Length: 526
Image 1 (tube, rainbow, N blue to C red):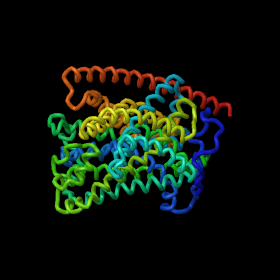
Image 2 (image 1 turned 135 degrees about the horizontal axis):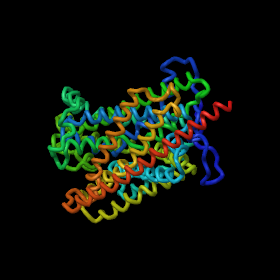
Image 3 (image 1 turned 120 degrees about the vertical axis):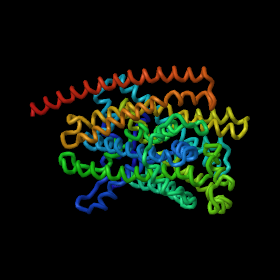
Image 4 (image 1 turned 30 degrees about the vertical axis):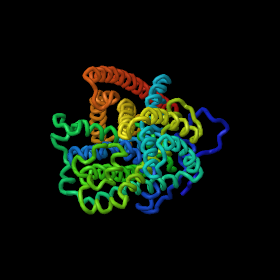
């Protein structure tokens, strides 16, 4: 198999780009034929891991653990449903890239106007930045917890992960995939170890996988959270728009003969298997996080759901649930492993976030820059709000600082809710279309039905949860007037989202008709 460097020599820092998606790695990995099922699966494995890290990043941690603390195993079904929806959406994203040879950003831009492309690019950039804020906070806190590096310095150190990216660009994309898989295994093994020590009630765990009327209830409140708000938090932290752009691009790294329909079908099949296997691993990580909240800690023991609070709770014998955990916690292993997993989770985003940024920049506005510069710009912009938050709370108590960082991470997710429909809806429309995908590869009737249900449900839930997310900017106890302002701002944003969605749908339908007309004309001329 080929393992070519990620980046080829460039003559300018910023260049025009209108070629294949991520041209430096597009079609660079050969997969031999007739090597057996398992060796073929191994050859196609990797892109799914880069996508899966987005489903187990630091943004997922506090929502899952706090959900377990407050509602026991009730929200396990939400993690399962979110993971299944993620598998469906990522399958469609990979299929779009493989069949059309365009990533999602390129496919949207080819069928819409330049002005809409710029709007969608800006929206997606904000979503990537919101995700990167969570990575900055997670990595900085992990450095502080492991090495006692002051937070301000730790935040600056996260900028230098661009050096890690420069190293990775030299070793080849296949090795990058392997590194990401190893980091996922580190996270998985850490939480498996902690959960096994806690001896959870597995009967209740499996019972929690079945949703009930209480799962999305808004009547019961625990520590300021209802099951509905907890479910919205888990869903919002799980399904992220940038992963759809990324998967549609990196699914094209395997060399495929597009003149052979069977070869395309083979690539779609194994890319889907890879994605589902890796997302299953992400499901287990998120499930283990929730089980940690229930079984590792005593009920209500975690008063501070921030990473600081979770770290301290893992070394505080009074907060742990059984004697085995208490004896292990005295050695500091539990809390140290937690910090190591947090650092691994943060570093996993280094390459995936940068690649996604390059995908949307090339696809929407046809501009390319070196990956190291792309990473540096994104990280510096993400660092600014984190530094401001740290500096503003530096003279206050440690708890105030922890709460402020946790609130910043949670509040940044509002951009994900805003941007998600603009990736899901075009993805579904294009993979439903025989003009785009051909009769063989367009969505089947049941995929189409599940897809529309998922898109409508996720968009509706995100819009429903927008007002509480905005209220979070006013602090933990907003006043009535602040709540009213939150509702008004949410209503305005929802109106803007609906208008932009209508604009997107109209242009996509018009672009699809023009595409069909050109295709028919080309067929008749030939």
